Length: 269
Image 1 (tube, helix red, strand yellow):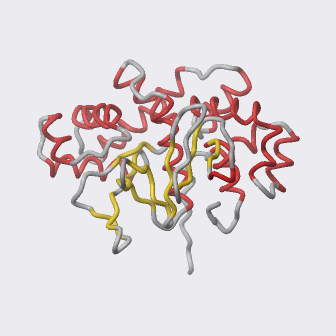
Image 2 (cartoon, rainbow, N blue to C red):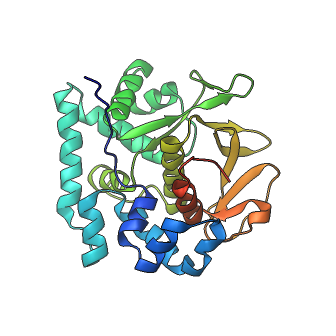
């Protein structure tokens, strides 16, 4: 039989907004023609994005936050129990995994190597690779490699960025491993952008050209500046908190995600 496997991942922001948004917003998301169509709904969209950064795309935390205004502690316990159980079933050390995750939270959005992570935690780079690849297989984390610009291929040996898969995974690890907030909203926003690009692009890389460009997605340069306004850059899509200037390729991150995920062909604006 022909069997197709489908991963049921946490909601992306488009599904979140299409679930909890007003009827008016849902209607415009269904028939959006240009990104400027979202402008009348700016306040609602930005508010929903703030909520998404808190609850992520896991159903129970989402509905509790949106319907009751508070995420109950048992949600964090559940996610951490899954993580702990996964590690133990695979014969991994919970303490090594916790130490690595703590360091990954501290370095998220910064390119790192297995060697540097291993030296910090006190283990070999081979063990680091084994544990991080396990986190990837179990859908807790993912990689963004630097690009070989001539071949349009990843350079596996170079430092890479490592992101978590969902905001609520981050919130859980902060509460149950770190005991405090480590990842601020600017880094969380970059993580959300990466996850959107990774799910909907053929190739996503991190590149460094004349200052850091965050991502190269299907040949398009995309940079995130988590501020109210941002300066344009030639041949680069600039994403920020709230400014929209389509002529200069400047877009609010929340708008960009909603518009891009509505585009069934996945074409970048």
